[in-house]
Image (cartoon, rainbow, N blue to C red; front, top):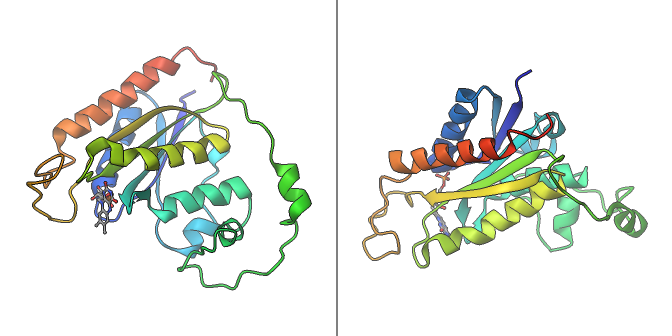
Length: 218
Ligand SMILES: Cc1cc2nc3c(=O)[nH]c(=O)nc-3n(C[C@H](O)[C@H](O)[C@H](O)COP(=O)(O)O)c2cc1C
């Protein structure tokens, strides 16, 4: 039976979407069944995700970057899955919220109390028997180049590994920053990025990962 893959991502200006689409086409070219879900700034997308993540052998999680971090939607849907409840309970501990979820958050939801918080934390060990994941971002990296993608890739990796998926790769490529001409920046003029070379790189990246896991149990 064909293995199945989920690509879950958010993209405001279409750059990350191009990579997501090339990833999907590459999985399908290699005989995988692939579902793709774009997460938008909507309460329903976060609180009632339309996918069952544990039904997949491979998950790709992607986002563009703003202010050094992946888009909140991507993080929040992963938090929703990790916490099993409204992610605003966790964000509240950081004095943050999700502005587009406007329903009031009950003050003390069972079982969100100290005892259950301690109970839910336990060591996670991942290995070849775990389902696989990759994380990906597009970014502009004006000042420092690829280094600017690292915090977002790490954060996405941490979230997906909390869901029991072993992260076996990180992919990033430049994505145009609106239509800014950017001659003085690290990557120079990126108004055509991601371009076909980036997308071929994306394709190669997935094919290498698939070779890597080819011998693993289904
Ligand atoms: C308001 C804004 C803030 C951004 N902040 C960053 C940033 O902090 N670091 C970075 O590398 N790129 C930054 N970017 C560039 C985007 O991450 C880049 O354009 C990305 O490819 C957008 O992805 P999308 O088209 O999938 O939404 C920013 C872009 C915008 C429009």
